[in-house]
Length: 178
Ligand code: S3P
Image 1: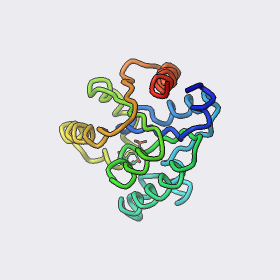
Image 2: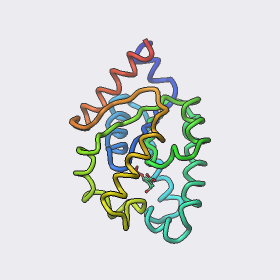
Image 3: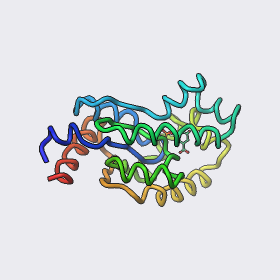
């Protein structure tokens, strides 16, 4: 398949644990492929006009997850986009199925050693990490790897810069569709 046909094809969905770089890599990928970029967390925050932590505190996780499902189902069926999901989106089986059927799912994988260095950067904005010990966070990280077991392409981002990760994804997309 040529770059042109990838360009007009299915949307690309980025999954992976919190803080692995889904938003920054998604933006770079969208730019390199000249596609519109959608960040689902940002869309949820704009809908409620609140930060994610405030949505969890005010309405609870279930309300956040419902809006997340609604927005992802809508966006992943529209071709030609790059869409970054929140790290918990694939906890919902329907979301996983919709994305696997309608889009190309890219799992951004990061090993625990590389990931734990990011904790100080992300902890304040991730309600799911708050009030947890490092052991509890590691258990969550491990449990979540099962959640990301369905994908079309996996890219390990332990040592990749943002643009390198985007290039790597484009290369893998060509291999997948050739
Ligand atoms: C969550 C991940 C977050 C955000 C919310 C819940 C999760 O997105 O959707 O805080 O359950 O893993 P990022 O993966 O972009 O941090």
